[in-house]
Length: 188
Image 1 (cartoon, rainbow, N blue to C red):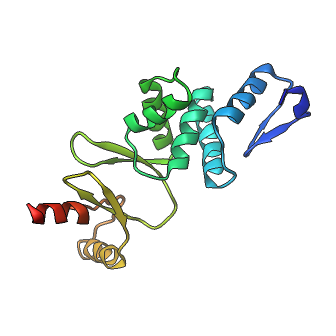
Image 2: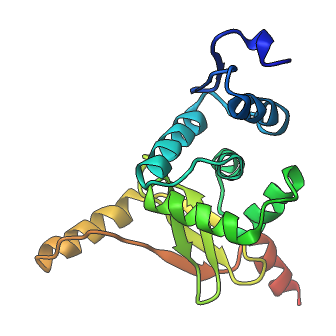
Image 3: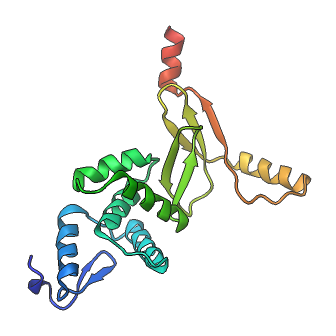
């Protein structure tokens, strides 16, 4: 579809793009072909990210749009390398440092959580307003299982009250073997 056919304003998700601007028109056509931004929470999160980037005096680029769209639609734990690999399938011009800096910006914006699962493993996951969750990590295959447990949450709060301690951040990571790897270990 040409820009003239778009009318005065064409909407893509929650982003309004005026077709009279050649740059905006090119961006619209690029996004239309490369990325499908959902009208759900990913679209709202992407709009929030765009506003944050601009509030920092930075440009909102096609590359940041692509990285944000792909990452926010995944809803899982991904390394910067995994995000980079996915983005490169859509646009070979995007560099690893651009992916990493964009993820860090999303962390600063509060839209992405950075999780360190060991000294050499940092994964990113979309920040949600869902309940706090913890992680089980398989030492053999690296599988990450998220879980919620009200008893654990209550116990943490109880310990904090007993110690007159205000919790600001918490993280529980349990390492072991998933069911598949546990069964393989038992057979050996």
